[in-house]
Length: 247
Image (tube, rainbow, N blue to C red; front, top):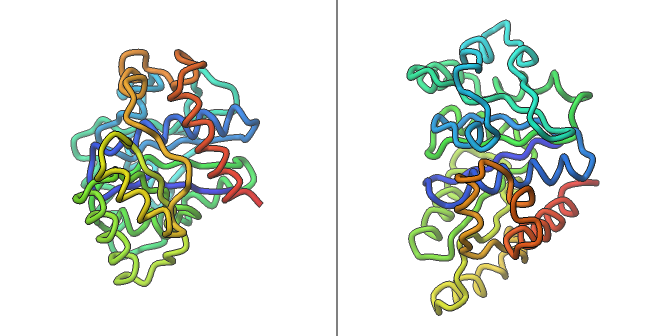
């Protein structure tokens, strides 16, 4: 089982869109896949047309007698199941409190699925917290989308520094560019520079309208725009990621 956390310190970088598409593509490749929407915005849950009110309270999922199986729901796609976001206003605070003081809490919760799933994808909330540290410890890969701009690169460096400060395994960090616009000199220069960093995959996601349209169709891109350039880009990036993490 490979646990992949889609994470960024800031929002608005294409994290959820990527999580939705990667999970879909993994399932399409025949991998038994579980997607856990931990981001309090619940956008992944929205994309997969799951009603938040159907989701169990987060406290039942992460307490001492946690039973995640009761929270798993089917999607419309073969091999793909989801733990939806908790719509409770207090859910995020509860999760933070449960994770505080036990940096391996989430890892022990996910251990129950070792024989059941090939991939677990986690759509993470932004920011640094006890929860994010738990997610980093529980994950085999921390997959970070990065826009090729000055502020996004600053964020990327802050995450690297956080891993060092908390003595986390920095080899888990893997990055890819999103919302890239090669008509802009700055994007080209930043990408050329950071492609030398072994943490960055060579394939990337350009700034494309079909990615934004996911919110209208509430589907992964291949479901409503199978022959589009956006679908091609996600497919090629997923193939590179898969080759990098599957033994």
